[in-house]
Length: 372
Image 1: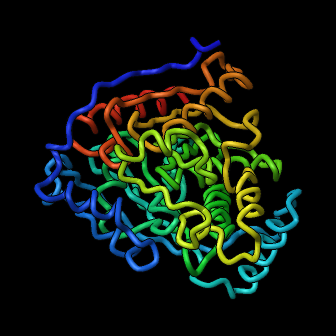
Image 2: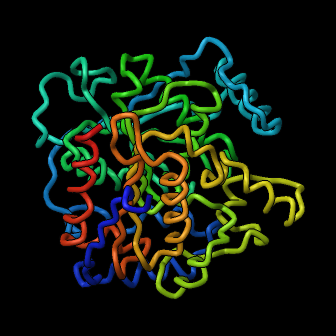
């Protein structure tokens, strides 16, 4: 059944296409970062058109939309008592207007896709308009920054669709499952505004890939309709960090492996304070809404996965693709359920850097979206 997985081996390019000095900055952040003291500096990596020559001029519009939770009844009924209790409390606070920082999303539209009407509206522009719900990563810490506006517009331009970005709350102030709750609320809001599930394509980047897949698993747990399809870019699917590539590629990838015995590991910062022992915490991370690699694969829509061969996340992405292919090789329309694209000599940062490299990433995404 392996022939049902489409694997494109795309020769990569070197990091010489990065802006001068950018590589040194990223290597420094990747290998020496103290996530508590330095987290907010991560947003200051140069990301605009002038500082990164591989980003072509992109013209468009975007706005930040504050929105409310629209569910009139507590929708959460899952079989994990701890997560159920936390989601119920978030819902209670939200319903009473007491949820800290509330909900918001970015709506972005490139001028190049030529849509008519109010392109920043939060409702469909046509009966069958498809949109992309993009979930950023940032180590579960940075869901949106002003510097990322070019990325939203670029995604809109290359995929030919409007982009909706949930600005989830996470990190130090908002432990698990707040980020997942915010994303689910954003999804329900889009449905309330008139989008149907089959009009929504979810795209998750890095830690956002974890959240994207976790949200799809949550929809299944709640017996809610799933989306048209999902794109995962360098997804962080196993918070136990137990796959061999975390060790094999540790000197090739800028993403550091901080053990979960360390209070500053990303999984611990994402999960929040706990009195669990190290052994208990490691077992807890196997829960599918934390590590979606271990979730119900059968419930998923069509998925496209991109990963660099020098990434520490390589093995868990490949394992996920194999699991999907084994459990659910074909969709009802006869198309393969999963597509894998790998990039030689690319790590977690350089996978999406360099004009030549970026020109290889977007066309397969567009083809995938156009088949949904």
